[in-house]
Length: 258
Image (cartoon, rainbow, N blue to C red):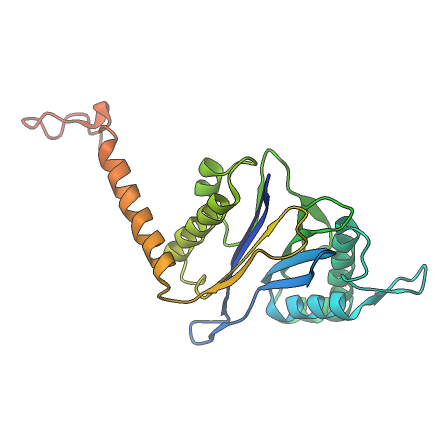
């Protein structure tokens, strides 16, 4: 499995991805799922991938080496894309190209052509954008109302994002919330695991302000996990018990319908 999350707040972009791949309980490995294309002062692009590893790697190779535009006969890459929208379209074309080459065979053997990509960044002259690109090559874009997107095993990390992040959240707090979301997912699904790759890019900077890998045992992440667990325990203790669940000690079965 995989868990990747991208957040766009007023100050910029946060992207986080785990590195665990799982092809069975006896075939677990580490592969980078977060990839950065950076031309300081011109463009910053970040891709996070989930799904079939061979498909993801093929798509990444296509967008880096280039795909010929049948209308203009020009080979297009992420480095030559004039806008983030055009770059997202290029990734979609790469996915469809891989499906044309390998899709039928994959479906015959494993039953599924599976890939999803978070794609965020900014090209000089345009605004910062974040897309989620599906296995059909189509995509959606993040909005101010819902300033984050997830791929992979997303259900465990979603509640904290829904409650704690909005477009005006400080970018460093967005990173912290994203890491809490990752920790929640890791605790509930062994298919998601460390190391964790993170990228933070501010609007109009056209470079990565933070590009870091969190290794197992890193003090900050360990402290974050412990503090979050303690905060949850303290929160539930501080909340009054439901009045309808308080039974008379002399009548322990009252209110129980069996």
